[in-house]
Image (cartoon, rainbow, N blue to C red; front, side, top):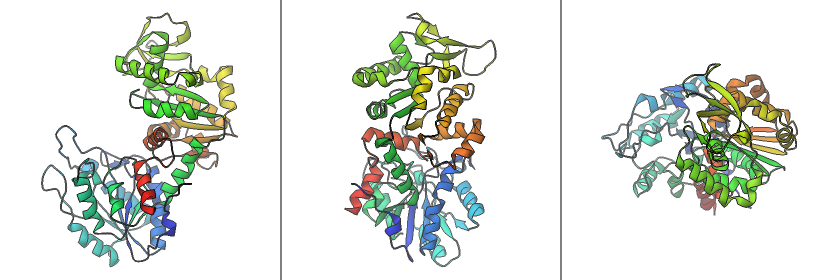
Length: 427
């Protein structure tokens, strides 16, 4: 059995500990939701307990322009708000090294990090937080510059700890860095992978629930998940594309590429297609800007004629979850894996909320939730249920939805490249 090298087994006394977190929670210079930060605090506290010196890092946003190759450095993508949050939360003093880019290709000179770490080891500050990792040249590179950046960074540390479960892509600070330092999984990383095993070794029946705005980006994970799950529920544009293909209807906003992807998914998964749980009642709305009594209506998709043209379908209706056959599937479930809202919740949250309530009523089942939008909407629209769920051992909320889908596509809880790098390093 594969096993991650755990930071609990590392000697951190007097060591400069370079920790990669997934604190990508800043929007327009403010912390939008602190859940991902809070989840990593046990790792940070353990480093202090063991006498280590923490140097933190995360990515924020997408400052790299793939078309021009330029990196935009702005306050909107700064880690300043994260540092301020940690300072208040933990009553500690943080420092962001004064590192600047010489041009639009990103930061190259890491020398200012030396003086920052010197202040850390002398007790003048409690932690150092690197600027946004995506401001550095090489972080997202596919060439040798990724190794160049990783090697430079490793020069300033003694130990590397990856606690960024949600940062599943093989970038310099999640993947390449492992080559140059003793490397370990953080406490959150270990916890997330352990819970992810419950998707691959579930208490059955397993009900998988996945949605998205583009079918082609989810076809890989869906093709793997439908083999693992006993039942599969689709939502959002993914479900709309499925309906267009199966029933020969047209839905505003669903393009030919999405329908072709849905067709490919169904044909490739023909032996498992019966696992798809259809929601017959769908909500059509005129446009995606407003909702009023005259703008929307409910259709039974099974009664629509082939060739029917609909406006935007923005939700599945709540009454789907009152249907005997659907309620039975949910009530008999041993596990749920949820990476979905059922529609455009800004206008129509009712379908998603009805589904979450039904899942919550299945008190015997394991409930695994992943994805920022999924958890955020659960928290916003059902705050009482969410608060209770956070203290329920049958629930687990992952900090990264994309990471879970990548692992499912790879076919293993250990399938993500940064996790593989840690395991190979241990060998």
